[in-house]
Image (cartoon, rainbow, N blue to C red; front, side, top):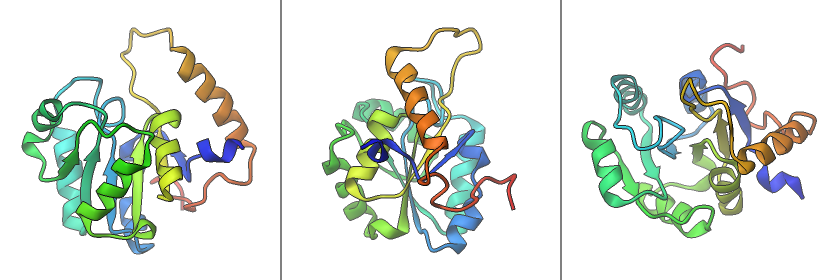
Length: 177
C-alpha cells in the first residue's frame, strides 16, 4: 500500500543527481516541479537553476515544468529557461503527467519526474507510471516547524528506507559510483 508513495530514488537536491548517468541509462526527458524543488516558494529562477537547465539541454534532455501554480507564476520563473510547462496541473491527478508526455513526445520509460512532495509529485508520477526522484524540500534557514503533511512524509520515507523499493534507478547520486 505504501509503495504508491515511494519514489524510485531519494536525493538531497536537484544538484545531487547524476544526469549524465540517467541519460546513459536511456532517459531523455525530465519533468520538474518548481517550488521547494528548484527554488523557495514563489521565488524567481536563480543563475544556478538556469545553468542546470542549460546543462540538461546540452546533454540532450527535453524538459518540462509540471506545477500546480498559475500560468503567470511559471512564466515568470521560466523567463531564462527554454522549457515547456503545464500550469494548474492538479497534481497528483494523472492528467497533467500524461499531457506532459504528449507535449514532450516521449514514452513513460524514457522520462523521470523530479519533485519535493510525496503526496503530490511522487504519488502523481507513480499513478501515471513515470519513474520519480524525490528531492529534499527547500527550507528557509529560520524555519523550524514543518506542516502535518511533511511529518507524515517523514514516516513514509522511514518505511521507504527499509523497503526493497528504494534506489530503483540505481545509484544516481553524484557522490555514488
